[in-house]
Amino acid sequence: MGKGPFSFRRPSIRRRRPKSTAVPQSPKPIPTTGAVASSSSPPPPSTGNLIGGGGGGGGVVAAGKGKKKAAGARLWMRFDAMGVSELVEYDKSTIIKRASIPARDLRILGPVFSHSSTILAREKAMVVNLEFIKAIVTAEEVLILDPLQQEVLQFVDQLRLQLPHKSANKTQGAGAVDVNDSEIHVSTGGQWLPVPEAMEGLQCELPFEFQVLEIALEVVCSFLDKNVAELERDAYPVLDELARNVSTKNLEHVRSLKSNLTRLLARVQKVRDEIEHLLDDNEDMSNLYLTRKWIQNQQLEALSGGAASNSIITISPRLPRLSSNRSASLVSSHNLDDDDVEDLEMLLEAYFMQLDGTRNKILSVREYIDDTEDYVNIQLDNQRNELIQLQLTLTIASFAIAVETLVAGWFGMNIPFTWNNKEGIFEIFVGGITVGCVLIFLLILGYARWKKLLGS
Image 1 (cartoon, rainbow, N blue to C red):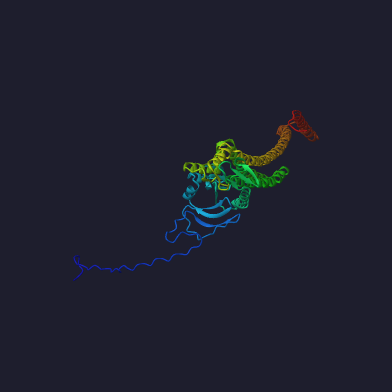
Image 2 (cartoon, helix red, strand yellow):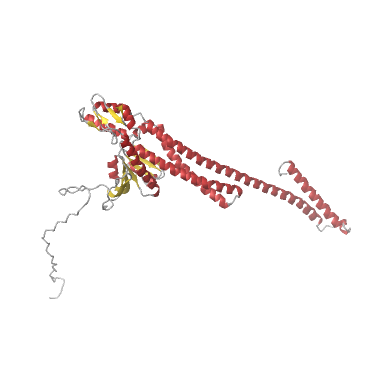
């Protein structure tokens, strides 16, 4: 049959391959090293991707194969109280859960607030943003953002050097604790002291969060002092050269120098104002005592749990353990005073004075620049006055010559004069007019000097 409009075609049938009913083999377990979970239960998903690490005082954290970087994860370095460090990748949600801080505090550590200075106290953490140092400090650890930057590496090295040393001093300084229900004593180097005096000796060192804050302030102040020293070394020769020779090149150098000075002064002023703000508010300084709040929370949890008199109460992660409710009451009454901010106040005042001295150096350089600019302006004004005097002198001379030209124009008209027929009259007439113009010039010049319009 022909293929007409009503002809039928058999549709083509595409054969499909039958699905395989074979059971797939289970993948072989991947062998792991180090501390792993039991084979019966799968390991929980890790919130951070471990990159590697090292301890400043001894401990080295093993590095495993990192997983694919999660979206929004950033590189952090974690330091504990013993100086052990590790590189990790955390996202925002992990940091918020780990440090118990609101999400808006992470914006302070972002690139928008670079070269800003902020120290915020939260319930369990301290958010530190000092110049290039962006960190989250708790009572037990510190998290540093972007630790591989050139400026931050100095801060990381100082943490590795100082934290293990201070932790070792605390461990050696703490003595054994003699626990009795009637009286509690602490042994410190062979001499037995009551609990309040002993705890004062044990807590003479700064808490962990203040140690980190002190190192951060030291690094930032040293960095600013170094920049100010370089600025002073470059400023004075350029300003002296400008005072000797006012040129476009020297003026451009001074302009660049002044812009750098203004930026550096603003950075020093931000850090100084933040420390001054903390010193003016005792409540903010009290909130920065994270270790003290941690101890109070531990005591409240122990008391709320109905602990017996012989139960062990952890006083501090780096202090000896005292027993009995009496010891807890003594320690809390003598060492956990919320209004005692003397240690932090002394720490902040020391760096406030150092920053104030750095600021005074910058102001002295700026005053030297202002003095040089005033001197240059005086020189330019003097040259401008000399040009004005020269212009006035030339104007007087032009007036005298114009008078002579006027007289010559009068007698140069085609009007008959009887003097035209006399011999030698031309020399006498021109000489007389010239002498008269010179006299006019001298008279006007003397009048200008008499009125002090021209210098002597």
